[in-house]
Amino acid sequence: MRFCLIFFLTFSALQQADCSLAKDKSRIIVAGGSLTEIVFFLEEQKNLVAVDITSNYPAQATTLPSIGYVRALSTEGVLSLNPTLILGEEDMGPSLVVDQIESTGVDLRVIEENYTLQTIKNKISCIASILDIQDKSRSIIDLKLKDKINNLQRLSEKNQPNNLKVMIILGMDGTSPTIAGLNTSGNGFIEMTGGINIMNSFDGWKPVSAESILVANPDLIIITNRGLANFGTLDELAKHPSLSFTNAALNNNLMAIDGMSLLGFGPRTIDVANNVAKKLQSIK
Image (cartoon, rainbow, N blue to C red; front, side, top):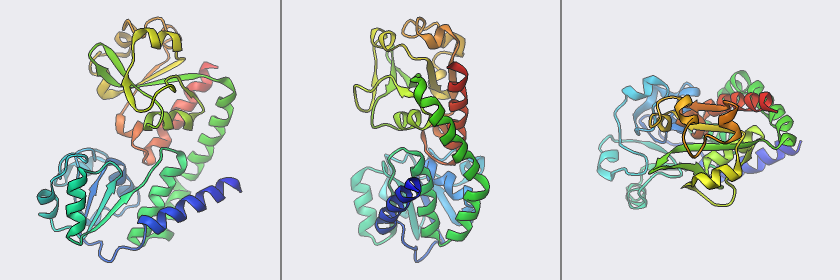
């Protein structure tokens, strides 16, 4: 009951702010990979005319015209495609471009998120409301996500008492791994699985020294596929001086995961979180 109430209150706030019915959804542009994923998840891609370069899933999305990087858009590039509706993630920018687009009267919706499991449902429901497909959305969620969400919640509750420490590496900054601190998608993901973020003493993504990592001593290390490209293989990653003496490296508890599926907080993130939560169960 408490979970349902939280969902209702959160979604109601979103609906008032961003999620009212669009007047014209005939030409949709999406700025943000998770939102593109959701549009396809809802089977509403027929009106998509362009996406940003973070929209790499599903593969069909990559065949659409590109508006560039979600944080570095140009007003002319977006408006040249004559959109009737623009769906953007919170980090859509720069702010000057967002202001210029809004000043033209084009229907622009920035979809809020705070990196929780509930956020994923909220984003799906918000887009469904904008596109006027609420009933269809509820059916798809029940069919494709309900069991996965329930399973993730059960696994997370089982994992929490085990106090297993997790570290997420985005990539390398010089010789130091860039790691998820608080108020990041990485931290939100770890909390979804019932793990503990070892780097909870700072906000944002920051390079962290070998000494700090060894003191924190993660039980599980997750790295994005792009980040792993700097190392080659997980075996080579485990030998990195910053990581080699951690419990995770010594026990071969390392995972490489596609960055958007891990950190995008779209429907795929629920699948990834279930896999990581199961991995944590095997470590206890």
